[in-house]
Image (tube, rainbow, N blue to C red):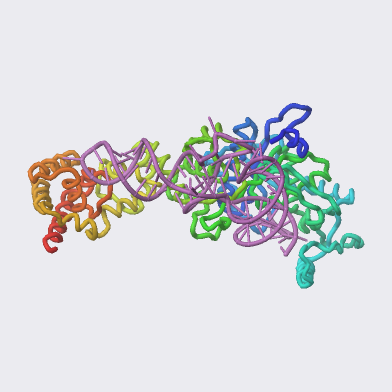
Length: 496
RNA sequence: GGCCCGUUGGAGAAGUGGUUUAACUCACCAGCCUUUCACGCUGGCAUGCACGGGUUCGAAUCCCGUACGGGUCACCA
């Protein structure tokens, strides 16, 4: 993009010709746990700040008293920290521009609200919720397309009683800004009705607090979800009237599900909260990696990166403007790739809680657990999946059917299995290495090799033509189960 | 309904007017490797960029319209 163009709409990036270090923020409201969409907003702001050597600030937007929840703030911060997103200034890390919790900044909003009142850019509104609802109802009934406040309090007399403060929107003004992602965006003031900046309870509304804080905290760039794009003109109006510089805005496309719908918290098809992924045994660096791919793409032939690599490669010009589809399959792939980088011990540590929870390997020793993990390491998409893999091969009902059964009905298979059964029965010790030797010996004796040797054994002990490494799997199964399954299999192929 | 945004293969997605005969990744298929299965490696997979006009010597890329999808119009953030 053209720098001159850029500066024509915002001067926050430069002052007196020197480039300032960017200051960006993530501003969650503590109404719940960290949602995947919010995590992405935080992540891109973080990436942008780190890449440019700037500061990443977390501001708590707790102005909705009704929806704030007790643990909301701590939960948000804890999950961000887990992802590996750390911050330079926030409620637990005071900087020069605090406080960082909006309810602790009420005096500030009050002061600026009065300033606007005095300047005639805002007015007191005594309307009740019921009156406003009735007004809207009538507008709709009349078929009006723009449902804006009627301004009936604009010229009304001052009176007693609670009031809200409304911003007086200019007539016939245009608000144009250069969006880092969308390009030039223009809104006409006539599309914006007089909006409340201070609620009756003395607490600011989102748009007001947000604009004032961005200015006072010297935020230079605001990267946020596209659902905020229509809030931008309102914030611009406030900024302009208060004489503040505008930050540069960038509106990121929404995250949608496979059906193209916005990720709603009620959507059952996708797990929505970071905490839930953590609980399933996903890796924080993999989540970081995956989320970075939601609406952004690297200029490389590779998509698997560490956090540092992502910071290094981040380029805001590569942020997409089309919706980002949340693809669970891709998430599994990314996590799998990151898990492959882990040592066996690390994977076991990740899987252990799930194994314990499922009661797997209770009577087995540590070596057995290690082997179990080793056998599935490569194909694990997340920690808890070890349970599913285990059940599939070890505890599910043993059945052989279809193609697998047909394979066993070939000549020589029966003799092969009988011979192997004897060897397993007689062996002193059974470990993976021994089992491999036994299979080889059986092959020699019965004159079977390659697929004709291994596949019948695989099917006979697992029921499946696919699965983990055969000797390792047989070792985990143990002598008793092997003999049982071999017996069952032989019984099956005797009766065609 | 007004306003705003978007639309490239089975899926994600590059591409910002001319080495694009449209990267790369996932999935899928084939081959190689492994005495089995995976892993890994190699190759295949859009005669076309929602549709219709236009601008241009030249458009997936710029403009206009249509269709479809989404967002937003609160004393929620």
